[in-house]
Image 1 (tube, rainbow, N blue to C red):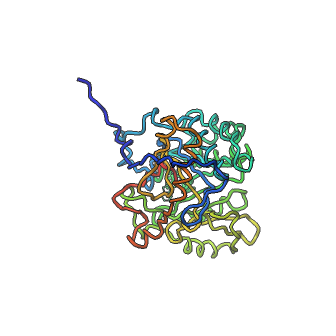
Image 2: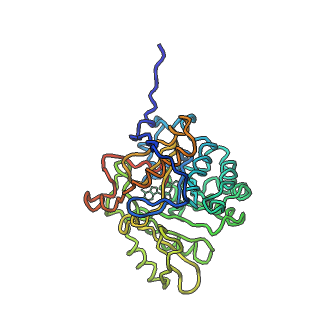
Image 3: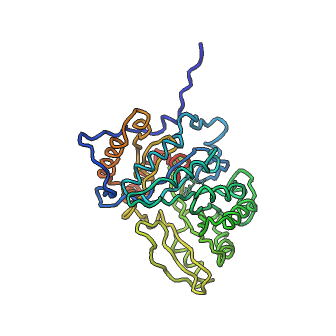
Length: 371
Ligand code: SAM
């Protein structure tokens, strides 16, 4: 008798199939949630696989050889992603960010970009299509991504010191290749490039000044991310978080900085500028100053579940609607209803539970719903 294999990854989250409202409504180009926050930004995870094993995201103990990644048939196809992008665009989404896992591992990613840049938003303008990558394949892919129509890239890079970087990615990957990727992206015109650094006290905080020095005056914007609690996966401890305020103080001691106004509502990073004109840096204070109040982001997981908060306890299975023969109008109406009911504010849960996870029992799968 053949063994039946249960794909555990598919059972990871409770995902309700969204209800189709009795009255279907054409999208108006604007949705507001229960706290009056619009929907503007959609992050799409295109793969749950990554070639890095960063301890704060996909630690090797969990994501080992036996880990069951999603089968290809579970992934949304490019056509399904593009169809959803069209529906989200009609509701007022203006920006798409491809993420993962490592998005450049998804075969044919350039084709997806080319399909997404054809989508028109509610105002008739194309959506901005961006991508977040660990940079490992960027030197090879930057030019093709630009030709496909990608606007910009964000590259995650936690250290300049090769030994620290190899230890953190736990894949023995050299920093020089990521730096070459950043240069290739710059040369291809995928600028301004943002460089995201997750700072963990005692792990890579000694890299903060060298990273700032490296990217000052380069045209790339370095952003420091507070190390977030992603549940039991990474053994998060508050004392490993480097609060942005402390980092700012450290940087100010070397280079005078001044604050800049937010460039867009709902922007995650607080922006600062070097007073000597060498560009800007940003702080993403997900822990000490959670930015739930004007969060306008939704996340689409690799197999089509919609998360209306990074820390939501369940997703909404849009793939079931796509594959169940529902019309655009039905899916669009279901989405409008879901967004209208959205009340997520994980900052409140954190103050109630003392962690940034809504539920410490649950692992937040960054590789699956994207960062
Ligand atoms: N593989 C791509 C990359 O490395 O950018 C995209 C996916 S990754 C999950 C997206 C972002 O989430 C990265 O910048 C990563 O550093 C960030 N991230 C992952 N786990 C995190 C954590 N525990 N705290 C803060 N940021 C985290």
